[in-house]
Length: 155
Image (cartoon, rainbow, N blue to C red):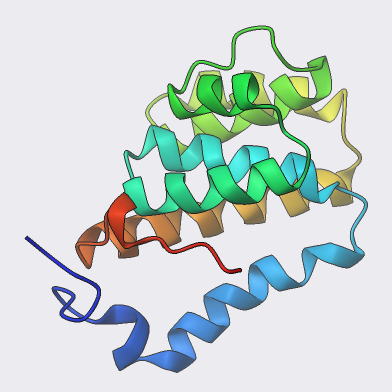
């Protein structure tokens, strides 16, 4: 059993500059035109796709604080957004799934083409960076042994 006091590697504490660099990707999106709600939905969905329990717990709480309903959060946690979301949000989620898996470049091309119908170039770039960043966070958290039980929401 792993606990926060003794992570497998300590990636978040042993190289704080790396953590800060990755965190800066998320902190710069506030000035962009993509809503914080949509970005949390994307982060939660990617975390579910990657089975990162810690990140699923964290982004469930953050999504809720952005007004995402419990039914929507549950669908995202099951990695099954179905038709609960707008066409714009679904386009971002399909892109997130294809970028997370990277297993079929033709499907990724279709996902990008669909996303371009809903987002301008800057918005799409912000979403892509957020997808890449959450995938990195997921992989680091999993490598470090962080689990859902380690997440403690801030008061």
